[in-house]
Amino acid sequence: MKQHDIPVPFCDQCSMENGALFKNLTREEADIINFEKEFRQFRRGDILYKEGSRISGFYCIHSGIIKVFKTGLDGKEQIIRFAKPGEIIAYRSVLSNEVACTSAKVIDDCQVCFIPSEILISLVKSNPTYALEILKLACHELGEANSFITDIAQKTVRERLAEILLLLLNDFCIDEQNYLKISLTREELANIVGTATESVIRLLSEFKTDKLVELNGRKIKILNQKGLEKISNVFN
Amino acid sequence: MKQHDIPVPFCDQCSMENGALFKNLTREEADIINFEKEFRQFRRGDILYKEGSRISGFYCIHSGIIKVFKTGLDGKEQIIRFAKPGEIIAYRSVLSNEVACTSAKVIDDCQVCFIPSEILISLVKSNPTYALEILKLACHELGEANSFITDIAQKTVRERLAEILLLLLNDFCIDEQNYLKISLTREELANIVGTATESVIRLLSEFKTDKLVELNGRKIKILNQKGLEKISNVFN
DNA sequence: CGGTACGTTGAGTCATATCAACCATAGTGG
DNA sequence: CCACTATGGTTGATATGACTCAACGTACCG
Image 1 (cartoon, rainbow over the protein chains, first blue to last red):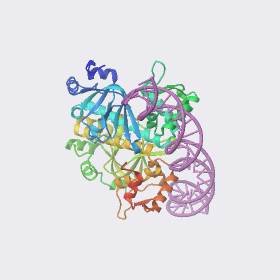
Image 2 (cartoon, protein in one colour):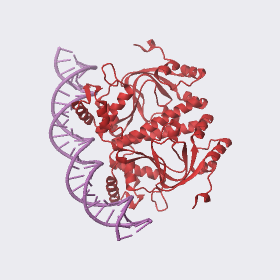
Image 3 (spheres, rainbow over the protein chains, first blue to last red):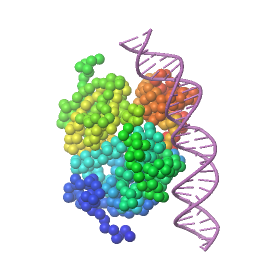
Image 4 (cartoon, rainbow over the protein chains, first blue to last red):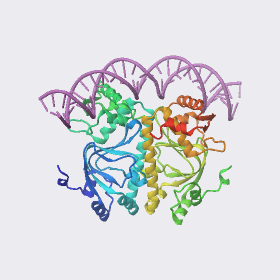
């Protein structure tokens, strides 16, 4: 399907389907965004922005999945989070007025709206409810980052992998055949967990032997959620 | 010195000395805070709030140092950050409207102002500049958290310890004798780095042998900053 | 003086990283 | 059409960083 064949989604409708981030806008504010935003499409592997670059706006995901990651030593990626429909990325850099501290790469072909920085800033200034909304978002993400820090620092790779599988299940749900609706390479999995690719492979096949998961190439089916919870120590 | 002997600091003056967080307030806004806030003093070891508790306000540090940490498996602490004069803590929970995801404990005797949640919320709503300011703060912290995640996931304990020493140097400066102005137990150091106490001890004494640091009980003097930078791989 | 918290060191163990080889698949170009 | 290459997945062997456990020293405190 070509770019011009796809109708540009309107924020108010997209908000209803995908999330609530723009639900508190006035008619005029929504109109401004709809007018100023730029609709873009990307395919798996495409890069939306790179760590260290100055960013002129943020992206609101309409469809698809994007991974947000930092590049560490030897170019090894550390995946910070995934963004899915209804979520926004790059807002951190815009609001802190710093260069991007992460890169963003497409996992699943996606459609996004690019919204210029000024719009976000002026929105925050003119609409207190919205300001609070986005503050809430940032603070929530901060809380998740703190948990992740503690996990990586204290849990074993095995525990973390089990936990990540559960998180993915929670964030992306399952398809008709009960497979996780997100498809990652073993290396990507390793880059979330913070370990080596080989370790993920070994542990996954252990989980498979233990009937905790079913593997089919990149597709993963969670067979025993309770078992994974036990391994992951989610309930301390 | 007893509590009543100490004059309650006024925000406008404290802001000038310690930081800029309240510098954009109108006269009335500052007056409201000065009127509503509650001045409190704590000593080393005191707990300001605990993970999991609902918080009714945030703290602005006037003097002293506070550690913010999460409690992980087996009660092991993971230190998320330190708060020093001019900085605020607990604002995350207030703004995200979640229970505290961390605990806060006094490292160096401190004087703080406790400011009720409603004040912060209404300030964000009524003063867009302030809202942006605090958004910036949250987003900046988020960026730091992301870096920390990548570090813990990818660097060795040795690298991380060197990096933490440099960060402490940067955040807390040195006294007349060039000792770091923050005094931590080995265990606390371990709980920042995310390792075992014994590992910190061994590495520190290695650093000492290599003339990178000088140790005097809990007091640490950085002798060779460049050397530590090299070890820590701060410049990738 | 016993108690408690902290610091230090040594020895042993284990989880995980690293290195290397190999296979499967798909895309590319001559 | 086949050789070529790149990418991803898997497995085994090996190395080692870091944790754990245990013992002991030190200092401070009531």
